[in-house]
Image 1 (cartoon, rainbow, N blue to C red):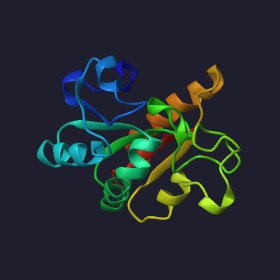
Image 2 (cartoon, rainbow, N blue to C red; image 1 turned 90 degrees about the horizontal axis):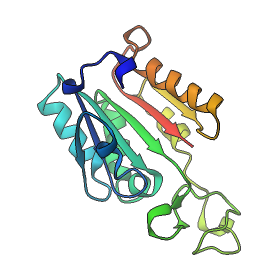
Image 3 (cartoon, rainbow, N blue to C red; image 1 turned 180 degrees about the horizontal axis):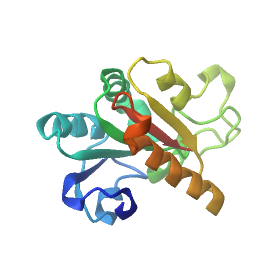
Length: 176
């Protein structure tokens, strides 16, 4: 956060439940740990009430693409000036590794030990789905599996916040 040049008292991190739930506690900024699927709703209200803040939302795929899915889609569609970071581990990681909306076909989970069958439908492809909306202007999918990819993620976040690259406010960075 320091390298972004935003004073810490002007940043708020909102998280949901699951793999992202403790995120605000690790940041030296204002933070709020919301309830399941409601991080986007909380962050939207905060940004509308305090437009001077840099509002960040950190959620997981299970938290946000299931119970919080509509909040996410409509916040992107409305193009609210927030930075959204989705941590996609393709399962409900905090409750035992069950299949999530983003679980890949054939991926083994505790509830699909033989792999996710195709008859349960295709996994949600979050970046592609959001890219079809008129609201968001910057969307990037990045991975964190090695130093090179983590540097790419840092650059993606900096690019999302660079006023020279933003015509409208909404931005989504999906960490797959």
